[in-house]
Image (cartoon, rainbow, N blue to C red; front, side, top):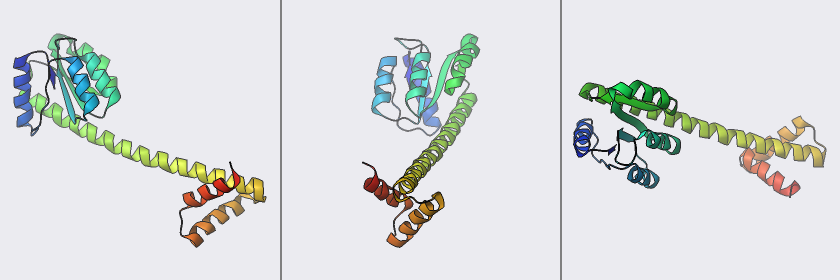
Length: 184
């Protein structure tokens, strides 16, 4: 949590504790917040603008681009819509001052739910990327069998499948062995 005023830090700490957050790291500086973000992973980052060394929207963008934290930026109501327009593409939730307790808690729940969904999608994306890399590896092994042993594509496919079954290895392991044999 970053806030340019001690009053803001105290108020936000109370609201966060009421929402079930026990361990709270706070600072009044954007530079200190960046340092904390680089050293630790935070579930939720709250920026109460302005900070002592910057407004805070740059910090929210940095956090959004560098980690998986949920981000809430609190700013004056007369600029909240403009700030929200600029930061919505980064996934930053903008709450206007004065902070309404119910809206703040609702924003925390929304940001937490969005973060959970994003982490689930990242996990799914990682699994899909891994599968794509495996398929590429197997296809390269098939191409090596076609080139060096004059197999047809169905024969190369069948060979890799049969080797995997016979040796109790994955198709990826068989493909890696084939590539280490025929490619240098």
